[in-house]
Image (cartoon, rainbow, N blue to C red; front, side):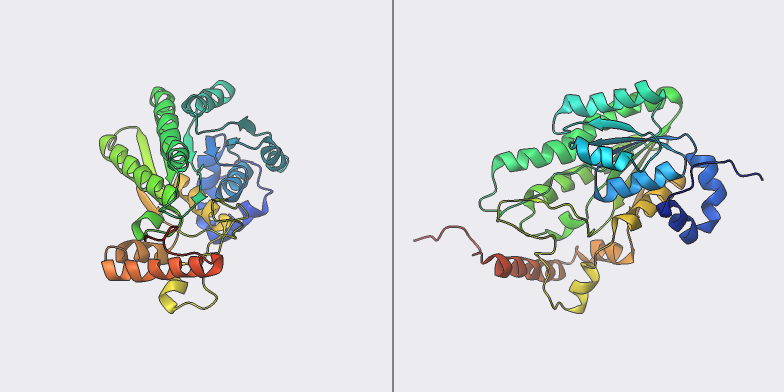
Length: 309
């Protein structure tokens, strides 16, 4: 079979093929000209995934709040559609889908990846922070999905990929807005998987685990780094479940998920095991307590913000 020519110049793409050589033909046939919308595309998982898919010949739409970062990413790609949008507003979440269809005539894959991450103590977290997290991490992908399936159904099918987080199963200290909204997002994903099973709409949930990126969360605890919950020395179980992956790892997984759709995918076996073991109360609490102690020690925090006289 003669392979269809496509834009296979990216190091990300070649690394993907080295790891998955049998997918070469499938990649060319399945991703050429496929229209893929990625939210949270300016950095981390979104940016790495955009580079892989663009190099494989897909038509990619990039969505994020920061135009400068999107332009920098687009300079490494083949004429992607750039959409600067704050997805905490429902109208923006719906409008981005319409812009993609207006530009390309269709939408094949929607990757709901954008996320608001706010770090704060649970006894002082603001309602506004919780609302921000829920607007971005739940309500925006709900609106985008509802808008996308209208076009997907009319064109004969489509694929929704929701980037979840297994952190809500463990209960990650100081990340209450994020893990609460991601728990709700997972519930939404699994609900539509049930409702739309057997239809032309495929819905996938991807659990990436802990990803090492250059994107820092919004912090109400002062300046923090991404590893502030990690200890310099941890027991073997803690090391196993907090070992970071890279955005490039996840980009390859998501590309594979587009090629071979599945209902649920974990980034690796440790995340799958962690999700299962989190059902055992003592294990879950022991690991999460240690993370909380690590964070308090590094930031010199008390358990509660005010003493009760």
